[in-house]
Image (cartoon, rainbow, N blue to C red; front, side):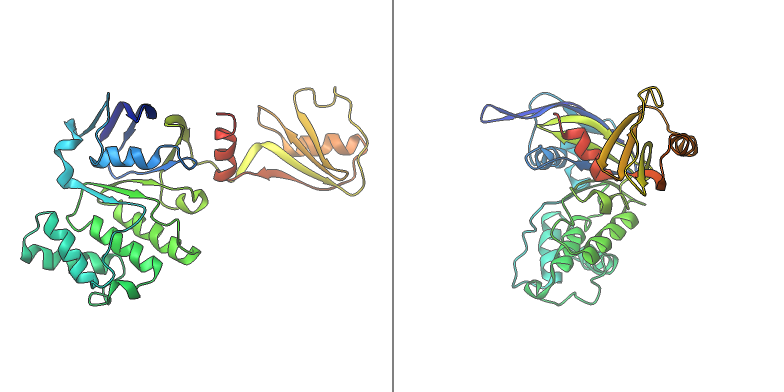
Length: 294
């Protein structure tokens, strides 16, 4: 288990991280989301030991994380590969920096390339790899030393839908044996692999963005065949009604709504209903609502 407690960081008199506290559980994939400049990358660099915070602490299994850099894998937003190297040469270079001996390194290179789907690209020059292949090579480099904690900074942001799907499937496989924290803005994609999300803005955690069904029971969308007659405020005293256009209406409440009861009441009030359904709301919409006024 990883515990982040009251983390603060200032750079050039500007507060970058402001009293950050949260926990990452073993074999969990935690998604860190927030707008550009929110502090996501800085927070991940603190977790990886690249940057030291001011006040606050980061511990993994009750030991300071800065003493455990050897069990942390980190993939930055931009992979720093030499384009003229082959996949094997690049991994051998990074593996030697991690202190792996030659025999272990040779074995691990074959294993990780196979694991990320690049088993047949061992001797391929990096400049010939697609963007998705380079990202998978970056993950191979990050897991070469079999870390306990894997930190991924926007691992799929520049990829097409197929490439993003491959990365998410890879993360799903990896979290069976390691703990993962990933920053992303691709929420609908990342919900495939992330167990939960934390929202950060202006260096502060706004709270969790929990997985929920894609239907929000507190909003109902109604479409009518003709413009509907006005409703008295006594018909639905605790429900807000918004007219989207002459034949589209949205009903919202702080409490669960009974779709069939609302339909029956509207018909009794003279509404000619074409369709009525709970309003679909995805992760991105809930995220935007969360950060809108902060």
